[in-house]
Amino acid sequence: MSVEVQASISNGNAQKMTTHDDDIRHLREWLPKQPHLPPITNEQLSTFLHACYNSLERTKKTIDQYYTIRAAVPELFSGYNPMKPEIQKVFDTVNFVRVPEATPKGGYRVYFASLANYDPQLYDFDNSLKAFLMITDVNLTVESKLPGYVLVLDAKGLTLAHIPKINIPLVKKFLVYVQEAMPIRLKQIHVINAQPIVDKIYAMLKPFLKGEIMDMIQFHKPGHMETLHEYVAQEILPKDLGGNSKSVEILHGEIRKKVGENAEFLQVLEKTAKADESKRPGQPKGHGEIFGMEGSFRKLTID
Image (tube, rainbow, N blue to C red):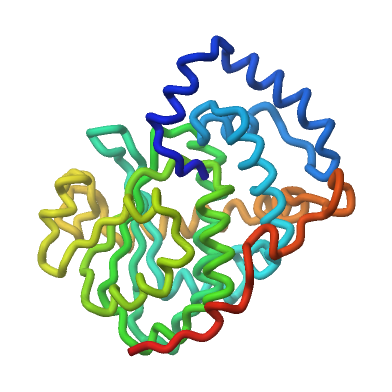
């Protein structure tokens, strides 16, 4: 994902006279020099270019990270089948919603996530991340070049008992993927019902967040949805959140059905969307080079 400030990239683009087709041709010439990468279609290249605001160098880095990380993190990208029992259990306990209407300002796509069941014993953090990635992969097949994405996370129901479920080494890898490899333009992140426990969770995640991402995050206290409405128009939200759209339950059901219908696509993606480090020019990339030093955050004390 491109997290650079759009203005800085746009300024750079103002000085180059290439067209989109020129950029695709340039990437086509670059790909044969990257034998570790799998076959990539022009449509996929176009998606990466769009996510990176047409910066060729950033696009190359993002493409490489995308396929490299997907090969390096089997915890997230293997067993990529939404019909597996453990993923179906995630859909039973966590709501994932794609808001049908884009934001009036900016035309951004809004995604919403919340706990459907507050019992921490039923919460599967690792597979929740995997389910989220499956949803993103499926939706990118039909809406790959949107102006931007907005993520709304509902903290209602979170307790101290949920915190030990957070797999710190895995969340670090997940956040590297989201920030450096996912081909979307992430514009805003909102946390609603931000009770005090959210501060503890944010403190755990902060070491892995880029400054650009931290600047996107807005926290909204319980009972103060009007502060969210300053960014996301109330009328487009699910009716559970005071909007005019369908309920969270219905919208979640639609995503669950759509992902299930694309199970075969996701399993093919698991096998094909990965780098082969044995073919990388020079030295293969190790985990340390991709994700930085391991170990510093394996154990955290919660005050």
